[in-house]
Image (tube, rainbow, N blue to C red; front, side, top):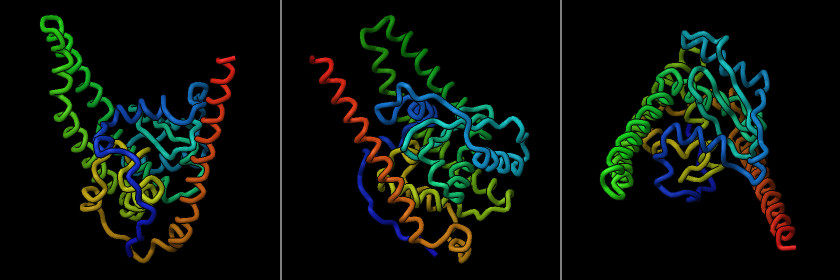
Length: 262
């Protein structure tokens, strides 16, 4: 049973789909609403940490080393920081949607298991080193190297994320969870953020490419995750939270501008 996709919009460009994992992690820390500068990482609720630890244990790894932090942001996002450390946004936590959390957590755990954060950092470090060497001898040579390396890095990132999707389904299966949990998370976020992505979808391959390797929903989806209309209700609530947070951010910026002019 396939859940229909509603309210699709192009909120970001196709380039956003190919952002790689480490950029997603940095963006999660530094971007968001206008109050992000004062935002600090806190400890994620126990029920969220339990989801990550249960999946970690099912994958055969030490679950006691798992640390899940929460960042105050209305957007729905998550990231692997490497070394069994993960970050989730309050927007994701506040949905209270266990199926969404399991699907997202499985993918982030897969990224961590496969060492994608460390690999991405190493790849970028190599490009930066080459750019610095070339730039020392050729004007603007460093910029040319960075631009030339971008397509290869993007292709590498897409390959990593596809591998993480496959590993996530293995983890879900070992944990006794439906393999379509990742599809559920993808559908939820596509309804919220549009076909183009944004948030958790921004660093991943195109949705149709990901779905090609994922199992379809079965009859359990309604019993396990609730009826389709419930997903729409939660999406509407999340969208409202994001809208109100953005409005508050814009209002604060306006007041600060007026104060500066005075």
